[in-house]
Image 1 (tube, rainbow, N blue to C red):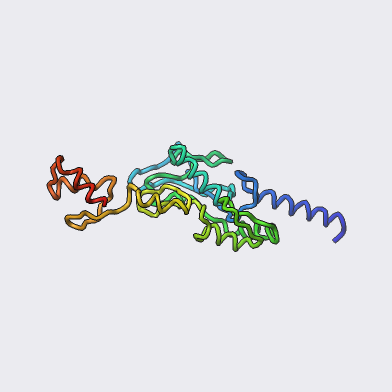
Image 2: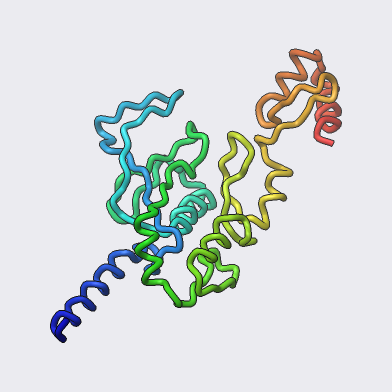
Amino acid sequence: MNQIDTEQARHLLSDIERDCECPICGELPIAPARIKIIEDIKTLEYTIGSCLKHWSVCNDIFCKSCIIKLFYHAQCEHKSMNRLKCPVCAQSILASKDMNSYMDCIIEDKRARNIVNIFQKNKILMCRFDCGHSSTDADEMYTHMYRGQCPKQIIECPVRGCMEFHPENEMAAHTDMCAFAKIKCPFCEVDLFNNSDVLPHMREVHKITSASLTVSITDLLN
């Protein structure tokens, strides 16, 4: 290979590396990912109950952590998830409370990860959840960030129906108070969701009067 060919190859590799950078943070992703988007919101067929939508996968590649942070910051700012858009193409992200998990909107790109790992070889990588952990092994960093090792990893509440995002080291405090957490009725041991089922259950099943309802609910939560 002559000098010109070598220079062209170097430029080509540089262009490929630049194309792999996350458009949000400007870094090479530890876990390259794409997001599900609504294909055409004007001709959208949408059924509230079944969350039936025409969707496709966005062509833009991001850090998985950046997408998760996008959801987390929207939540912190009390923005509606179904109004979120791709930061690059501005297509509406397929995110709805009718889903089982907002994480279903994120699709990891394994082919892109294999390519990115080549450029990250022997480089010092920092945890993208800002816990301070570093590594020169991309696979080890992936395990740290997404396999429960990072104390600051932003994760989704495991309680069905909640879908709130919190850092790993704050999730226990959230689940203790989660409005969607199941609790048992002290009278019949039925599982209830304290945000919606408790009051109707107490009134209708156990005929608890409004005068004694406060005391009963206190016993229930304790």
